[in-house]
Image (cartoon, rainbow, N blue to C red):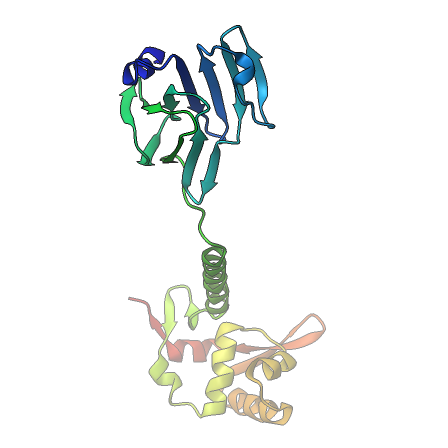
Length: 247
């Protein structure tokens, strides 16, 4: 790797390597420097090590992320051969230099002059753009609407008189409107008190009493004592009249 960097510009004695990490940090290595004290070390540098002719450290001073795009901005302090190694899965989208892929990783080689700045852009395949807040909100509202609609309609079961029978709607249409309204309520909620019927059909007490009396005289409903209260049921004969076998 270092040899490759040197081959780009064989006259340069100094080699510089920037190894980019997923978290945006950068491992920096200076090799073959004449004076290690001449190597500029950023204030946020950690893991600083040096020998007689090399310096290494890790920093986040050279990288910046905008959206899904990372940018490497580096100014060389020496005439040097620069090597940049990108994280696995990276895609270089901007900048100049000689690019090579080795062992699944992308390397960029470039000859740098002292004081020269290079800017390289790259992105990571593993990163996905976060959906905007309004999209999350819209999904939540749609899901809530579906749930509420389901509960609303499931609370109103289809008219049915028996498990294997359904209501002949045409026969129901022959009844006067108020009678049909009470009958349809009892088809859904058979065995209710008169107060329950009044609340369920939203009709005055006097109207419900009169219509129930009419239905009772016709033999369509009957009152049965259940516990301490009387409850209203559809008569068996009426059920047989309006029922039809399910196909």
